[in-house]
Image 1 (tube, chains in turn blue, yellow):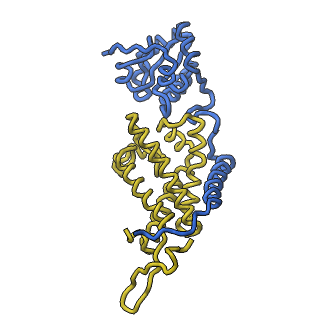
Image 2 (cartoon, rainbow over the protein chains, first blue to last red):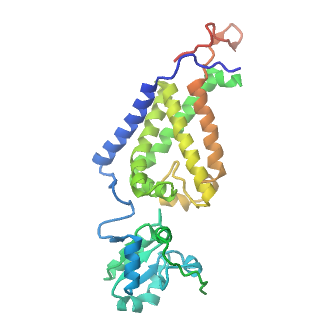
Length: 157
Length: 173
C-alpha cells in the first residue's frame, strides 16, 4: 500500500504556477522582440490577403484562377473546380506551366490543405515577387469543404 | 509499488521530469512563431487559440519544471505537469483518431529542420504511440510526486532502509 499525503494540495500554489507561467508568456511575447501577433494566423505576413471560403467562391464564380499549392498528387486526387496545380515544392519547375494562364487571369486565389499548411502563403509570396497579386484562401481546403462548396474529385493523370 | 515512496526514486523523478520540461520549453520560448505553427498543425484549435497556447504554454512548462528541480511547491508543480500531460494526451488521441500526420509534435524542438534530420528517429518526433507511452509514464511520475508521500530513510550502521511514517502516513508537504 502506497503512503499518500495526508495534507491536501495547496490549490493557491497550483493556480499561482499556472497564472505565473501564463503572465510570463504574455510578457515575453510583448517585450522580447520574438513575439507573435496573437490575433491572426501565425502563417500570415504583411501583404498576405486572406479570403474566407464564401468570398473565394464568389471570385471563382466571376472567373478567378485558383492555384493548388499542395503536392501535385493531392491535386490529382481532388481539387477546387478549375484549379491548376502550382505546388510549393517544385514551384520553379511548375511555374512556367501555368505562367500563361496567370498572365491572362484577372484574379488569382491560392489554397492548400489548411491549418498549419504554409504552402499557399509561400506560393502567394513567390507570385507577388513575380508581379502577381494573389489572394489566399483562409484555412484552405478544410474551410472550403466546411462551407459545403464543390470539389472536383475526378482523378487527373 | 513502494518504490514510488522511496525518497531517492522521488528525487530522481523530480529531477528527470523537471529537467525534461525545462529543456522542452527552451526552444519553444526562443521561437514562439515556430511553436504556434506546430500547435496549429495539430488541428485541435484555430489560429488564435493556437497562438495563445504557443505564447504561454512553454512558460508554464519552464516554471513548473524549475520548481520541480529546486523542490519548491513540488507537489503543486507536479500536478501542473500532470495537467499538461493529460491535455497533451487528449490532443494526441484526437490527432491519432483523425489520422492527421504531424511529423514534429513540437514537444522538444520546433525547428523545421528537426523533421528532416536523421536523429532522433522520426517515430520519436511525430504524434504516435511513442509520444503516448512516454507521456503516460511521465504522467505516472508526476502523480506519484503529487500524491505519494516519500517514506523517511533510516540510516543504520550497515544499511539504509525505508521506514513507514510514524504518524498516520503524513509526509513532508
